[in-house]
Image (tube, rainbow, N blue to C red):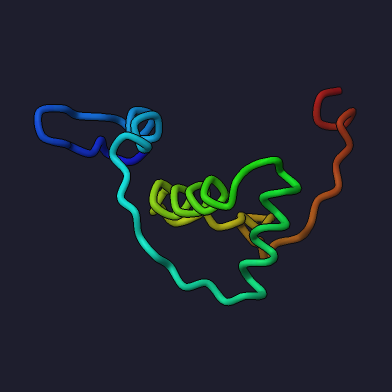
Length: 95
């Protein structure tokens, strides 16, 4: 989880920031290529939301994602043996 951001006189966690985003928003202009904007508008309509909300979801996902590296997949066997292979059944082991 990301550390809480601080505003003058108050500290908010991620949830507080998201809930209070509208009251502390800044208007800006972003140039988006026309084909990308059309897809964005289609996606927003399909989800029943606004282009603004869809953009905010994307920005939040980038800003609040974990910066930890993903764990690498483990491949088995972990230890390779040069000795003879042994085939035992459960009955031979526990019998």
